[in-house]
Length: 98
Image (cartoon, rainbow, N blue to C red; front, side):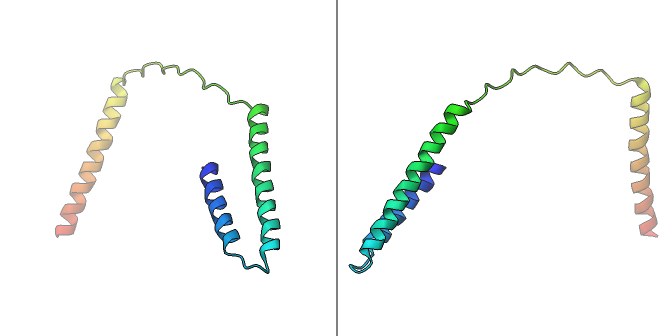
């Protein structure tokens, strides 16, 4: 991404440099030199950062242990909650139809 932005910035700087008049060409050359210096400093900082902080290897993936099966009590509670929700919905539909 930073390379793409640097290319776009370079193209815009060149277009700006070419669109200068003769009276402002000196200032434009100084500005273009500053732009090139900034780009080179960014490239140097990126290389230094890559040397100082090398990427860490990804941790090994370990599969999780298999889930325990539901107990009979958990199944009864889940079925009861589902029945309660269905009953409440049916009651609401009945109540709205009255």
